Length: 127
Image 1 (spheres, one colour):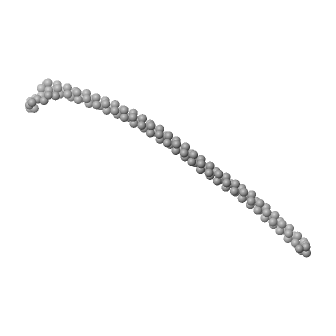
Image 2 (tube, one colour):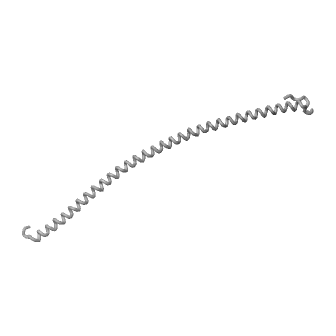
Image 3 (tube, one colour):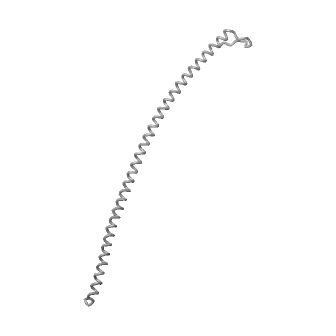
């Protein structure tokens, strides 16, 4: 845009046309910049979406790995607990069998003592 030497002079029609052209050029530049910004925003949204999907996939994989690890851990714990419980059951069964044997022996001993007392009462001279 050309500047006049004297700023106190009114603008001519030519000055107004030049200003209109300059404003039109600026509007075109603004529209072009807006299109570039819109394009950049779309590109960034697509890129962010791609990264978001990648992160979500990694998180899903990590969660699956954690779940598998947790299940393996619980499986090991349950196996250990099962073996301990089995040993406890075996010990209880053995104790029950031994208790029954001791009870049978106590009954036999009582029976023997009763028979011995009867025999002693029948023949005191034999001793």
